Length: 162
Length: 186
Image (cartoon, helix red, strand yellow):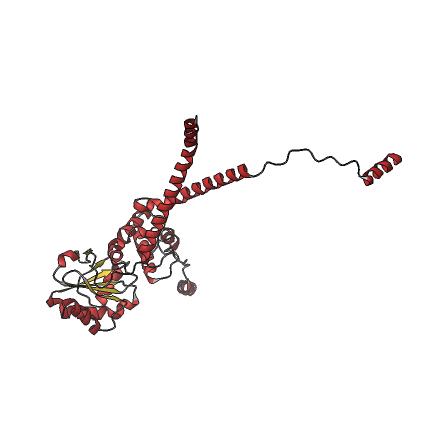
């Protein structure tokens, strides 16, 4: 009887504690995470929202695209596979860096070519400019005229004081 | 003596001439490309009286429908997307029009522009759309029609010529009926 009087309150306390105990639950990151989705979305552009990368595009179409990326990542697809999927669905223009084929290669060739051409034109311009500019004067400075009365007086004064 | 001097002058002048030819060719080529791009970007959608561009639609149900194979029929091509709110305004009316005309040799085709398949299927189910619909793979069809947005609808007569172009949603069933009737030549 004495044992019961000790055990029962203890059991009661344990049960009360079990009701009160709260599991510590941390906020779960969605799988795959937003960062993983955005890392791929950053290299894609939705044709509806020109010049806005998919990772920051606020439209419903872009939200749907990001959901597709998340689903494909969850299915174990690689970045390349996902990009290829979007290209097959919507064409090359969804890629931030278009593949160098067809007329696309001009995008990669023209800027450096234009830079080289500009450098060449500048070089030619400066060379012709230097060639046509008058040669710098190499003759010695003109002698100081010695018939200046002021200079003669100054020299006399200097000699006297020396 | 005179010939020697002339030869020397030629040998000196030649590299400079070739250089300018290369530079000018490059600049003119670049300008041509820019001009062509500008002209292309400024072109509006294909218009009434023009021949409709041919295309093949791979429908969500697995069919392949080629426009050229529909010759002799009136074809209505509707560009839409599940994310497009104005498209919802005309979706039910388009299905009603399809029910009115499907037994009169009129073909309705829905081209789903820049969309995701689950949402597109849900949209079709929501509006009870039964005529063939499919994704615009590679945005090839929309580029051929040079559409500016969705919805846009094109009615093609039996000879393959565009008889009606609607930019934006149809306001009523009557408007769709009038466009299709024009295609039927009635």
